[in-house]
Image 1 (cartoon, rainbow over the protein chains, first blue to last red):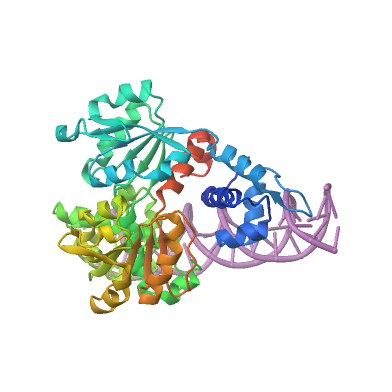
Image 2 (image 1 turned 90 degrees about the horizontal axis):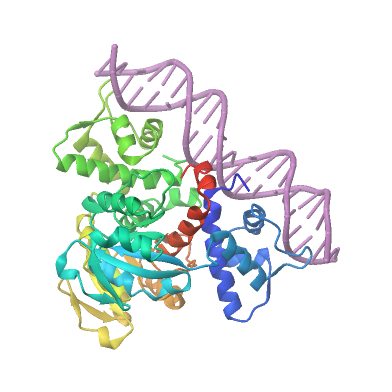
Length: 213
Length: 213
DNA sequence: AGCTGTGAATCCGTTCACAGCA
DNA sequence: TGCTGTGAACGGATTCACAGCT
């Protein structure tokens, strides 16, 4: 299964979300056409994206919602729950700690902060700890993914400690380009970058149209 | 200036951030080489990205930090502040309301929520209002960009009201694909999608390497 | 000599047309 | 017949080599 465009992975996440929604609404059968409308891509795109990983539909018929949902979960690794920790329990970290959306596929197993004033605060029944506890927590609680919610100037050092502790994936909310070894996966979720892009697109509606997006 | 890859815009945002940082540290001169290291792209990429918009450096010498910073601000529309409002003052909306990073280029001019219990709460000296006030606020306070921090199932209806109110740009934190007319710019900042991708990349380090990212 | 700026070449992702199967 | 699955064509983005200034 080599040669998958990385943008395809993002679209798989979207398809999965749509399928989970369809399934919750009791829909049993769908098609590349329907998925493409919901995801706002072409039906070609949907079929091609799926074909990188296998054949999950029935020709002449379509896809069975629970079947395709399960396959996509499997592909994305969302057929199991991942252990997650948050470093940086400022307002953003706290808001994320209480965000209900994690529950489906992720389990919050640790909160860390350098500020002693935060230690002992509790979210979802889990206490905030000193950052020094990170390595042990990662090992003992099977934490695989770390979420960085600290200011930009300490994000790199937090990332370093996460990697030293054995985390293999980092979700980075700080507006910096992290340097990490290639075996560590990083996703940047920098909403300030999104805002900055918005201003450009508002100024250049014509150009944005040409870019399709 | 037609034919700009849309990914180039994201990189310009990164370059700008690096330049602001260099300038704050008193650095006056830089090069495509230095910028490329910080942004983790190639120097070719940096020069090409800039060349879509003009020639801002000096051959044989490099770039003058404040000059290039100003040019990028101009291109991205960040040489002025944008009026911003947040709809959905749950924990995420509240955390964002207090996030200091906005200040440089954005000005929070309104908070809205459907829940009357939230009305009157105040952040940064601005009170939370009923969603019904949105159209008037947009017109009277020059609000250009709206940030959606509501649950997925009400995100589309909030987007509709934002567009009716005259907002031209939407930063969407809800995990849904919004339907908007093409003259409205949307950025999705869905961190759950980022997490879901992470799980895939952790499972497939080999494949991720092939994808470069 | 040195670093930027850019047309041309290459690479990669998306689109397409249609083959394959129910 | 109908919708999926996919090799081939296309187009857009990145890489490159070098021309252009200072």
